[in-house]
Image 1 (cartoon, rainbow, N blue to C red):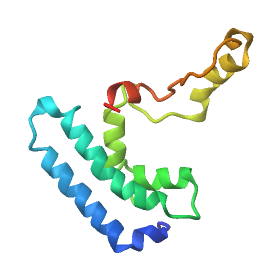
Image 2: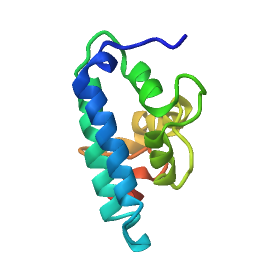
Image 3: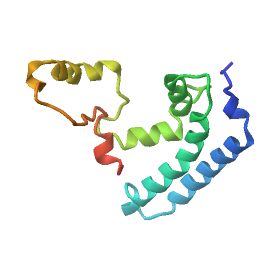
Length: 132
């Protein structure tokens, strides 16, 4: 039996999920040329409502929240949100801790001795192609 988090019992969270479903249905009606522009922005904005409700819940880790929000607890398949993230990630997968090793070793090495104030995106290309 899947664990139930306290935010899942909130009516506002259930309403937010219904809203996300309605928005995804609406964006299917938009022209194909808007798939990675307007559709993506509208879907992310709608999804962020439910995510913010879940994020406000205490007593669970980010990893637990991600597992809940990105995979169906019953089937183990990706949720609509998980599929959307993968669809906008050129590497077509979620990252793993091992994906950080190269950048960490570089930042710890003398080769990065003069590197300051940068952001190194280790996201499989998501930030470059998702419209954020």
